[in-house]
Image 1 (cartoon, one colour):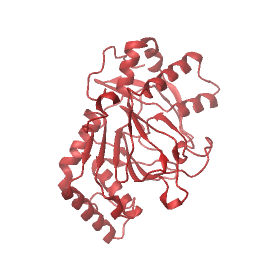
Image 2 (tube, helix red, strand yellow):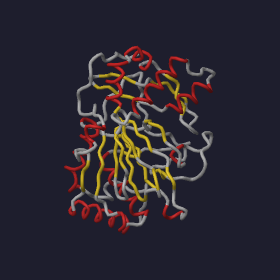
Image 3 (cartoon, one colour):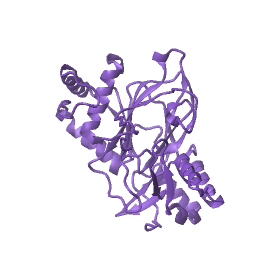
Image 4 (spheres, one colour):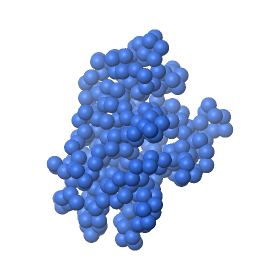
Length: 323
């Protein structure tokens, strides 16, 4: 078990939604010049007849945006842990062209990694049917998506179309979560630094992970309650009453209106979040009848060049290995 941090986290990553919901410190707006650079890179890829994921960052040249990309990466690791980038004129592009822009940007920020056993490097986040936890992952439905972190350093979402109603994106700081537990419920900290079994749906790979890990001056967190419960049950080791209490506490803090930050992602918005400091969620939604109008986002999982070093008992997991 790692060292338990006994001091409050005072870094920018320990934010509360109530303090930042009315400012734009977490929003970056593309300039006309930046959009021109992205569109020239898009043209370069399409002229070569390439598509996601079969092109490199050299095929998508955006060196003029190096300062912006450095800012994005630093904000993700050393700032608030997330950023929303607005202003991409999504109406100009086909879905395939939007995919190229999102993936191309990701190539310059980090290294895209596989999101499932099929080796998909760009995920489709949309409603494909009723929730079946044995076959369908929650992001493929219109159900409420509980707070969690994905299996990569950073997750990036590009909104193509939003729902008819609902589908609000919500972020909550894992660092603020820690501060709240440290201050009000420190009796759970030891338990949350112990390892839980974790089994990702349709992955088949069972691992061990604590919820919190403090290593070399940085606290990291990982939380996927559904997959902890699946793994523990499958092993014949269902969670104890005190473990359920601890996870219930996490859920209640993360969903506190003063703690979380809610936002409606508009078409063209890009949201990046550090999976070690931010947990994300989404409200349920009602979709349009017409398939072409339904809520649709593209998702990237990125391995980052400036990612923190993780402790041995908090193993890094960048993607799901292709079979």
